[in-house]
Length: 306
Image (cartoon, rainbow, N blue to C red; front, side, top):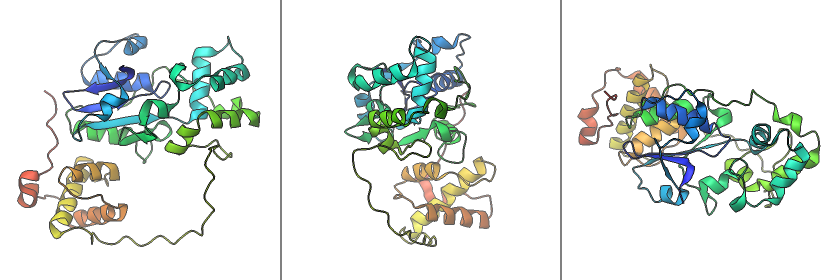
């Protein structure tokens, strides 16, 4: 059965997996605006026939040429947003938590159903790119990376609008009782484990014991691209230069570089290799002829939509 929060764009070969209360409305609005559609009533973004919806199993079955993007949110924060928007003031917060604890995912309200239930199969995320809402405007994997990668496929996403906001409510205020913190940790143990979340100052509650702490190792100095062939190393340098030029000379994010290089059969790159490639690209002349080295496999972003 299709999930109304999983959107597929066949013409761009992009799948967006959007759990409820994870900037769902804002992301749908950004997608539709990029396609020339704007609604005055933001609730229409939830009930529009402009989208094609799919189940996580259907998205998992899409080919490797599809871009699959998922979004997640801190479980404690997401639950308070759900409570404030959907259950307050009819329920007190303690009673709401007890409802959540006693409801299995398969029968749960989609607004508090586990994100791993919507995004994972056998504990493995279906989207290969997962964006944390808390980091969406940071230098980590964020909206800028989504814009860049969608743009290469002809979907020109603008800034992310802020629709149906929860007004920056600090979720810590709801959890003055440590028992509630632990209950939520137990209920969303899979989300916490898979997407690496924790409550501020409180260790995540998961069933598996943590490995004993080991002495931190000194990070190794980034080596040059020694595990790449000369041709592959040159490909990485030129692709990095191309992306940097598109972004005003800024170093491109590792997600974008790995994605672009993967299209040219370049193996998985380390952060050190990407850093070295960018340094080499900056050392050279900015006018690089990609066709000369890469030939028919040149990385070419799709032209802007007319």
